[in-house]
Image (tube, rainbow, N blue to C red; front, side, top):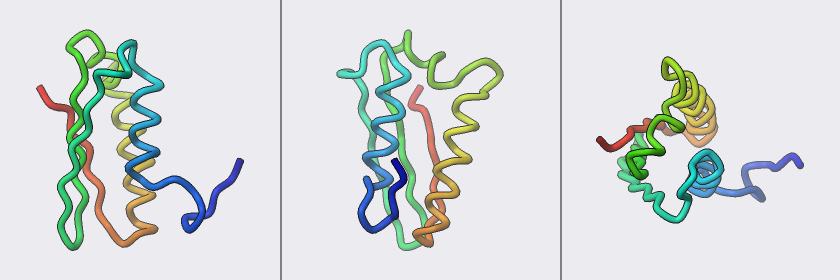
Length: 86
């Protein structure tokens, strides 16, 4: 299904859905959003065992997610940053 930005899920919902689909403990996922006029910062908190699933081998998964959400942010005039809480 193809969504337009006006009718589709928000960046927040998309990020939460992607992260929950990747981890073994989706109920433990917490995403904190910090917003300024030009930037959205999402801090992702998952259980320790799921961190590797979010990062991927050599950072491949988190880098792909950053690319996707950076592009979505550009459509909304915002810079989107993803961080994983240690």
